[in-house]
Length: 343
Ligand code: DAH
Image (tube, rainbow, N blue to C red; front, side):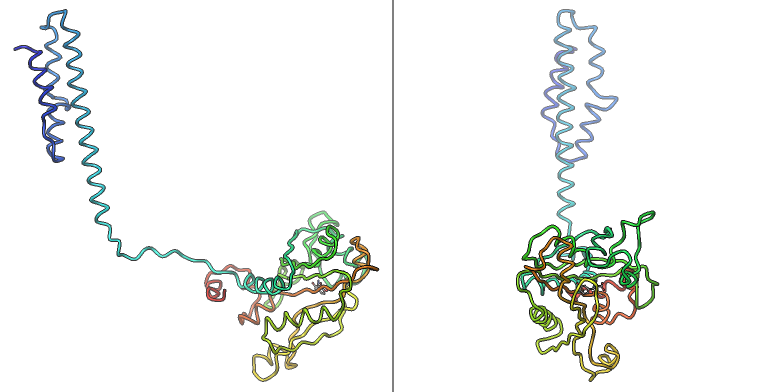
């Protein structure tokens, strides 16, 4: 038998083989590519081929192997693609998807954002600053020098081995930051976390949040402050809300006041919230002390201003009827997920 002829026949057969099922593909593989394939014996016939034709014969045998391999791979790919398509066709697109778990805003953020929104409408812009503060911005610039008795009002966490750096005890430090780096007119609102070395209980915590407000310009008056704070109170508690300003003391304002909102005593809840007086204490405020302006490089002969500080936790506790301040910091999802609809 002429090995050339046999090889050429096989070559032709390879291209003529019909492969239209994975089973036939497997037969094809067994015939041409498996260990006992029909091409292999031809290699043994090389010795019967005349020397001058051996190269050509070798080339032909390689061609056989290569064609068989190529055809096999092509069909293999084809059947694989088909299988994948079939699988996809079986996916039921009408089935409901896996739910995506939505987070919710933290109640402290909800209250803070509401306050910010109100003051942004009045032209205030948000100024945030550092929580690790130096003594000057937190105390000295705010008219509370080293030996000032008012320092005892706020028990302070100092950084280890430092008398200079501390965790800010109030957002009023942002007033000093802004006033010593910007020129009036200044109209900012500064939300943020503050720290005090206090015993943790249901009613007080060593960390909490405040929103600071500051307005400095030529001719800013106590009446401007009162009108601004009334607007704020009416946005939060309703259009007919009444406020009162009670004289108070803060080192950085003169005069200083505390603002109460009239809640009434009709309901048990309001009685409880206001300790029977009907008045709810909402914030501290006052005219920026001229000394504070001067400390920050603003001429108190030219400019005046008012400032206020609002505590967030107490307001959030009232609003959402949370009985224990510690809940805000425990990150218990059973607690946090109750505020999904609040914002
Ligand atoms: N910093 C005060 C506190 O933490 C709150 C405060 C009172 C801020 C009066 C002010 C202000 O800006 O004018 O208790």
